[in-house]
Length: 57
Image 1 (cartoon, rainbow, N blue to C red):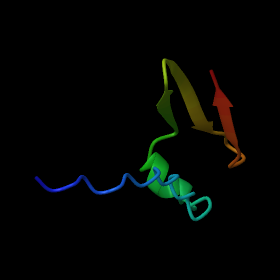
Image 2 (image 1 turned 45 degrees about the vertical axis):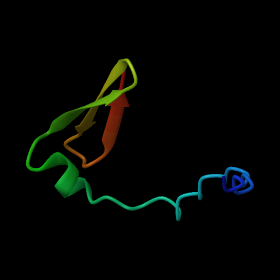
Image 3 (image 1 turned 30 degrees about the vertical axis):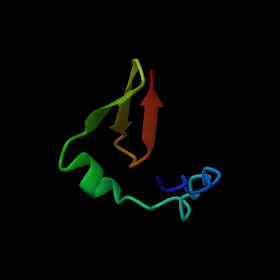
């Protein structure tokens, strides 16, 4: 019977390389608002006439 190899400690997950930019035109895809589900909550992200973004719960 072969001996079991020694256990190695678990490696911590590598952190992300930083925030990845997303172009809002791709995100909205021609729409004025989108819904974002985060956990059990739904958020509404909409564009204003002035081109600003508003996020509401």
